[in-house]
Structures are given as C-alpha cells and as structure tokens.
Image (tube, rainbow, N blue to C red; front, top):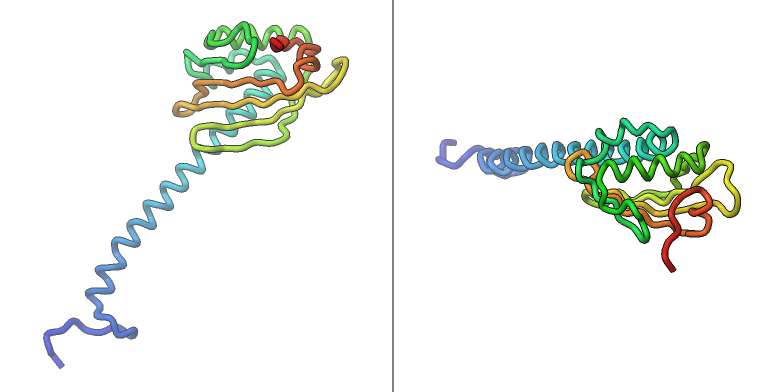
Length: 170
C-alpha cells in the first residue's frame, strides 16, 4: 500500500499532519503554563509584601523592612498627607507617628483585589483607640518586587485621626 500518501492514524488523519499540528500546541501550552506560574508567583510576592507592610512595618514598627519592600523613591499619595511623595524616609516618619500615637494598633485586612501590578486592600485598625474603628483603602503599585507608589485613603477621617493618621482636609 505505498500510495505515496502519509500513513493514516486511527482517526483517519495522516500522522505527519497530526504531529505537525500538535507540536506547536504543546510548546504554546508549556509557555502558557510557565507564564501562568510566573504570574502566580509574582502575585504571591505582591500579596506577601502587602501583608508584611501591614503586619510587620505598621503593626510591629519594623522600619528596617521598608528598604526591602519599597523602591527608593516610593511615592506616598493621599489626601492631606504631609509626607506625600517623600520616599522611604517619609514612610518611616509616617510609621513612627502612627506607632507613637497608637503603639498597640494592629491591622485586619478585610478585602483585597489584584490587577496587573496593583494590589488594593481595605483595612480596619484594631487595638485600644477611642471612637469608631478606623478603616481605609490602600492601593500598592509595584515595580518588579517592590512598592513604587502607595495610595492611602482613609474611609473615616475622624476615626483615623484618633489613631494618629492626619486628618483629611474637608
């Protein structure tokens, strides 16, 4: 039966055509899996950075971690933030002020969303502070594995000022 045509597989398609189509698909699938793994690990690193910021930097006052978590020129943004745009040193001043006025404050992360290089987190402060529970929304913008911008929005400015966060201008 040597008709010159490629041998047929069980499905009736010639083997050479079947193999020719499957090879690139396998490579594309492998590339997609690798890309997906890379994206997942990048997302996991971004989330770990955010949790570290809230738990260790804000919650424990570990200022030495700021250099590892933030780019040198990290931009701090938000309404009425005196330290806005002040880089790592501005962030250190912010954390010192917060920890000085509410030394036992801890943060519960209520929700988070991740899109591209951004992680948005809604937080709630816990600890001994007067008045309503301070809550806020922070958006972390990443460059590689570090935070390049931090957008800080207090959801209740009066309760946030009770724990040392600057009051928003009306």
